[in-house]
Image (cartoon, rainbow, N blue to C red):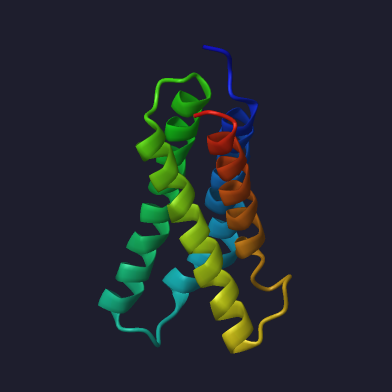
Length: 127
């Protein structure tokens, strides 16, 4: 089976996003969170845990799309991954609009939307 370039591109985009999330986001988001003394420790630690759960999820999604690119993931699994990123994009966009953040303050929805779109095209191209 030939390589699905849409899924391969998705694996690469998610890998890049995961490293940006881990490295730059860790510096800009996690460090200030951990220094916050006004949050209850359990609240702070739950946020810290969620941060790393997203990191783990993103690296897992790299595997899903890499396998899909090679024709080794089911269409159902790939569709589920696409829907997860679509939901992330919609949630983040909705939060940004609701709270009136600028795009540069909360741009994650753009990447999540791109990942969902690449995945949708990959699925329609014959997963």
